[in-house]
Amino acid sequence: MFDVNQVSHMLKEARIKKNLTQSALAEQLGVTYQAVSNWERGASLPDISNLSMLCNLLGLDLYKLVGASQNLELAEEILSNPCTLNDAPIDAIAAVAPMLPPEQLMEMVRAKKDNIHNLATLVQLAPFIDADLIEELGAELTPSHIGEVVELSPFVTNRLCAKWIEKLESMEGFDLDVGLLSELGPHLSQEKMDQLSERVIPDSLIVLDSVAPFLSSDALCRLAKRVEHITLNDFIVSMECLMPFLGRATMEQLHKKVVDC
Image (cartoon, rainbow, N blue to C red; front, top):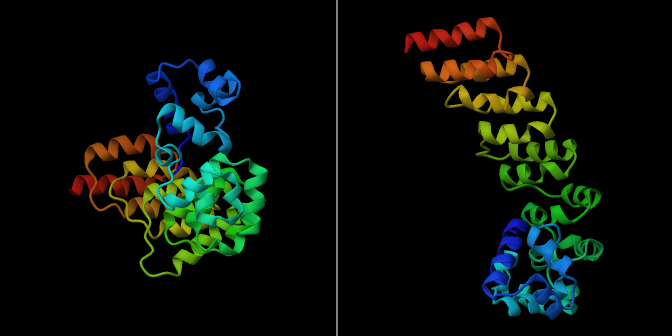
């Protein structure tokens, strides 16, 4: 997966090892030193037309720089010869999406949208294309696991996020934990969050603080009561966070569990 911070760090470290100033590197690439500075701060990314020369000058591995762990041969061809972009499969284009101008990328994605068959490809594309296109592409796709929905939830409407989850719920073996549930919280209705919380069996009270703001009081109480073993420390620490969300009766029942243990 592409990581802007990793790219900026690798570029800076490689330039320093080559004993080059930002200005000297910029001159060899035919760009401004401000462009190089922006790359190293993670404020912008090198254009695809600069990548091959940049890697050659700094002695960097092209694949490691862009995080293209799949379709390596195609990714290399694309990055070294942008003219091949229109003939490349969508997975290879997704691998180099961060280096493409947004308008060019979205034009290619629209042209190849019928070849996008899974959310994994959309996860790669989502940070670099507009919300309407993500929504259009995602509407017809089915997630293979909840992690894909979590990764895409900041980029799509709550309605589409809920639709994906409903597809997962119909599959055998659908699993959910408190951590994943809390990440979905900002992107789902409270009603849907309450429904999903019924699938979760937490291993401690402390972990419930991250999901408490997104659940109704009744749903949170039921979730808390499903904690099988409650230590005194777990109870004391968690109550500081959960007290505003839990009723007195529930807190007394949870305290009784501690005493009984």
